[in-house]
Amino acid sequence: MTKRSPLLYPFTLLYGCITSVRNFMFDKGLLTSVKHDIPVICVGNITTGGTGKTPHTEYIIKLLKDRYKVAVISRGYKRKSIGFKLADKDSTVDDIGDEPLQIFRKYPDITLAVDADRNRGIETIRKERPEVDLIVMDDGFQHRSVKPGLSIVLSDYNRPITEDSLLPYGNLREGKHNLRRADLLVITKTPKEVDPSKNDGVIDNIRKYYKGDIVRTSLVYQEFVPVFAKSPFKMAPALTKKGGETGLILITGVANPVPLIEHLNKEFKEIIHLSYPDHYRFTGNDIRKICKAFDKLKTKRKFILTTEKDAVRLREFSEITRPIQPFVFFIRMAIDFVGDDKVIFDKKIEEYVGKNQ
Image: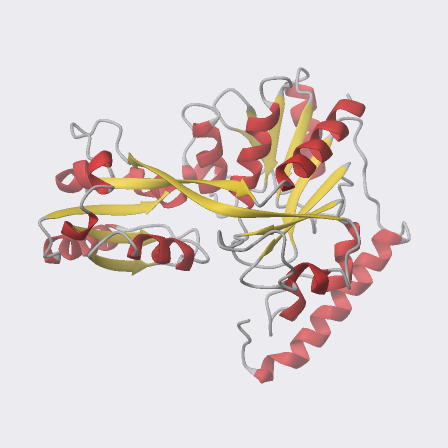
């Protein structure tokens, strides 16, 4: 587990005091948590960095959208707009943020809104879209002014909560004991080789802080998709054939690109990885750097590959990247459940939504 300079530890103690006082005030009713009369499912975590909230949110949408009118409310991290904003076909990253735009492009029939004030966002959705049956709140576990009916917390298998510390020395947003507020805990990014019938100690360690239902999911890398829809080439199938002759420029602006790199290293002979911070806004200089790296690849066939979230931001450079557009792809990512955990997860959600309509 990544730890930072010990000099930060005094600030961790101060941060811990602040978060503890804040949670105490909500627990005792000194600060108000609003429970809305519509099913609200919160998908969150207690750590910084990527735990897989977006693919899990997308899974919940897919699970429910054919039977219910689903809405998603998000903060819209790093967007340039302010206040409440509903997504539509003309929305951009500046309007609603990259992850909400990714979700909306995949599920354009749902209602998606962004608002830093989740209570206001939920109330505005209900006013403007009264047909909505339920709301999925993306990354709202610490947003305690809303009291969700079902709270799902994600924890990365490779970055155990039990071995982490509070910010800024560690990566925890609040103390481990606050896991008790969750209704369901999901251990994400579980390696495929993990035997569900054997105890690897991960769940036992979490049981010290959380007594409820625990399920495990793995990342599934799916098909390659052109970033630019007007690409005249259908090159995605070639990426999975004769990988030893194919080179990649891999572009990532995500919190943890390691699982993707490990997956691609199994198939491709040459990979040049250009790493950027999470939610990074690409510039013209970045695009030129990508083009130069592309020219340096030595393999017979070469492509530019990125994540689905990064693809949302790269599309904004359609003019600059025109010479390389046909070669730019993103890789779809989804989740799969370990063992029979899907039954537990689906039942928990479906029973909650069904009982609270």
